Image (cartoon, rainbow, N blue to C red; front, side):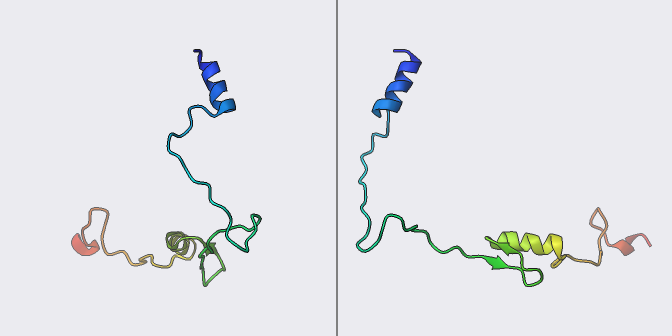
Length: 88
């Protein structure tokens, strides 16, 4: 059988699908199928500018890059890890 024929059979007749049987669930009582069943999304808000992030990591990155919060301003070591007063 050629590849195109196999692909056509798979698309039109459903051959080659999953071999695992599955059960189709019905809607709950009192609900409609138009309802969107998603869990509420948690957002993390910036207290300084109103930025909203979906993750704590994103908020921390925003605070570091935009507001320089959590960034050490005083340098005490050089590029090699020695104290700045090491040579003088």
